[in-house]
Image 1 (cartoon, one colour):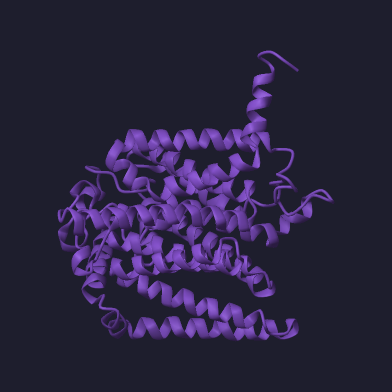
Image 2 (cartoon, rainbow, N blue to C red):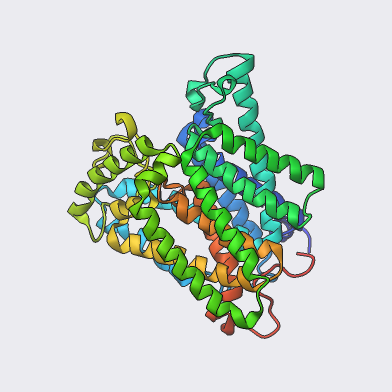
Amino acid sequence: MSGPRAIPRVALEIAAAPRVRRALTVAVFGSSFAAGFLRAFWGWPGTIAVLAALVAMCALSLAGARGTIDWRGILPISLLALGGWVALSTLLSQYTTVTVLAILATAGYAFLGVYVALARDLIQTVRSLGDALRAVLVVSLVLEVLAGILLDMPFPFLGIEGDLAVGGPIQGIFGDRNQLGFVAGLAFLTFWVETRTRSVSRVVGIGSLVLAGLMVILSGSPVTVGVLLVVGGVGLVLLALRRIPLGSRPVVQTVFFALLVVAVIVVALLRSRVFALLDATSDFDARVALWMRIRDWASLHAVEGWGWVGAWPDGQLPYSALSGPGSAPVDSALNAYVDAWLQIGLVGAALLIGALALGFVRAWLVASSSRITVDVWPALTLTLLAVTSLAESYLLVEGGLVVFVAACIAAARRRSWRGLLRDPGVDEGLPRRGA
């Protein structure tokens, strides 16, 4: 075929090429985690333009690879139900225009997560995420060195205070130490999987782990320290389970989940001592004060919520009436579950918790029954997101949302009952050889 009619086919073939898929995946992760950095330079219009361009290119790539990717039975019903309720909030919203725009942006990031999970297999996804996180952490460190040592001046438009010379805390390109800590924690987990699977050279792997660990320390985020302790504990349990005979695993799993419930209760009862140990008492008290104020507003529309907005908009009730630690403006409830309750009501919060729980159970079953190191990534990543969501709302927006969707779909590939509906001979939703 020649002439104008050949152009679409050529474009689809190029978009579906393995190198293009890899580049798109790195761009998806990099731009979603650096969204705040992009807004600092280009504002919301530029950030939305980047998102729209990525969505268009990823859609073109999926269209070109439609013959090599099987998506049936992979998209979790729990995620679809959550997305449907978020869309339905348009009809229930107190500010329809804001909700429609927010839903379009959320749908865009969620689609990018779907693309990553469908177009790349798990080890490729981890590898691309590692490349993206290395880039954002290196840029963060370079800017902190400029602000805190070489120029000795803050960069207010980026939220960088320039405290590197005194040991931090630092904010990197994220403008917030807790978000830097979250990204660095996710990076440490991802780099560890890369190193164990020999996806990168030993020098790159060890250097990346050192970089991520350094950024966690310099962020000075008590939230991150607590989260990584939990993730580390879950990781050790998973490694132990993978060495236990198959017949004994159900009993051990039951004991583990029982101990987990007990541990949660103990931590809840001794929370004051736990937060004092993590030097997070004042931070926690401020969060609780914010949640109490949110409760008063959320109770006005307890079941259906006020309408989806994602990151809180300026000048819009009830968000303009709420303030965070130190009476400073905030763009979230500092808790994904409380945020979901405020925006999409108890129904939406229940759907979010259900999607996260089902994703984790699937990922846990896969990770505990497999001897392949990369299979632990979805379980540990969902643990990281679930625990972090108790103190931050990263799960609901941008990079956190992309990783959440990608991890849930990665787990559903191996544990979806709808997989029985696939045609015989079709693989587990992975790109075919050479794709």
